[in-house]
Length: 151
Image 1 (spheres, rainbow, N blue to C red):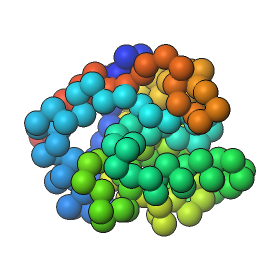
Image 2: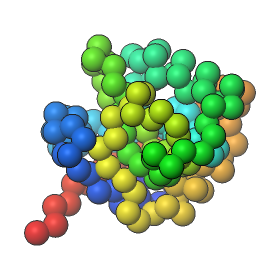
Image 3: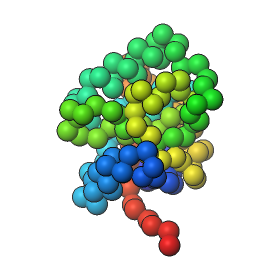
Image 4: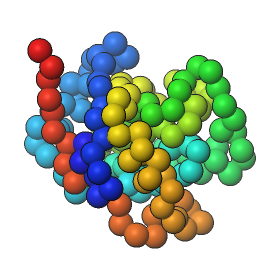
């Protein structure tokens, strides 16, 4: 994943949800993520890119959890995980990168990968200035996602 701040290498796994991974791969093949902005950047929580307007449930979860301080550390999930919403009605694709362990994460998103290189880039993105709604003040997002399969 190339971003405006540098490259992030992610490893995806079909163990969590083969359907989600297949959909992610198919969307990558048609450049769906090319130019996609990160809509929310919440320090010590997560970075969200994707179909902000199509998924009010994800937005509500993000803002309520952060505002209430419910992002205490949890050994269940680690930072630098990649996921999408569990919303069956979502016609788009929300992409989340966790920047800290998040409790009850499995109830909110389907994890299908992890960052294996570029954690420093994720942390750099996490440090950008945001407004009161955790939206970046300066544009930041995905330039492109390139699929590479190791043999």
